[in-house]
Length: 234
Image: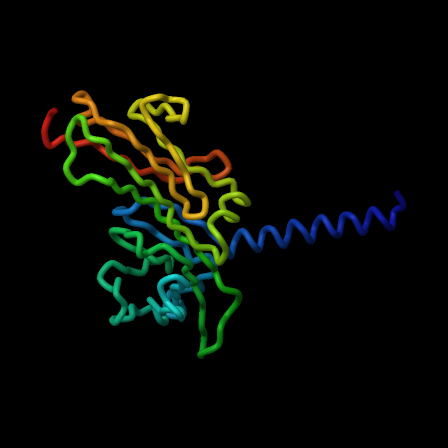
C-alpha cells in the first residue's frame, strides 16, 4: 500500500471514530421498569439550565411533539406535570414511570431564541408485567405478559434485531426458563416486544417470584419481578 493510500485510510478511520463518538454523545437509550423513577441525561447542557428545553415525542400517542420544559421551567398543562423535575445538571427526572411515558425525549438548548448545537436525544424504554388473572389460586392457569414499550421511529422487530434486544423469564433462583420446561409454556412476539409465560399454579407457588429481564447485547438493562399471592388453595 502506498503512503498516500495509508494516509487516506487513516483519515477515514479517524473520521469514522469521530462520527461514532458524536452519535454516542447525542443519542442515549434508557431502560426502566414501570413504577420506578428515572433520570434522563441532557448531554448538550450549557452552563445553567435556563437555556434548556425538553421535548417529548411518541408517534403512537401524539400527532405533534410536546414541550415538557421550556427554558428551564415546567410547562403546567402537561399530563405528567406533577411527576417531572429538572436536575441541577439539566437532566429530566420522571417519578413513578408508567407505560405511557415511553418514547423519544429531546434536550435542546436556546440562547436569545436561537438553538445552540445539536439536539441530545434520549429514547426511554419501559418494561412492564401484567397478569391474565386478578384472582390467583392453586389449580388455575395463569398467563404473565412481559412487554417492552419501545420507540425508535421504526418497527419493534427491526429494532430488536439490530440492537440485539432479548426478553427472558427467569425463576426466583435466577435460572432462565425455556420452552423445553414441561411446566411452562413460553411464547414471544417480536412485533410487539412481548414474551408470555403460562403455567398452572401449584399450592407451593404462593409467594413464588418470576422475573422478566430485558438484555441488550447480553447485558441486563432492567427487570420486573412478579410475585404470586394466592387468594386461596385448591
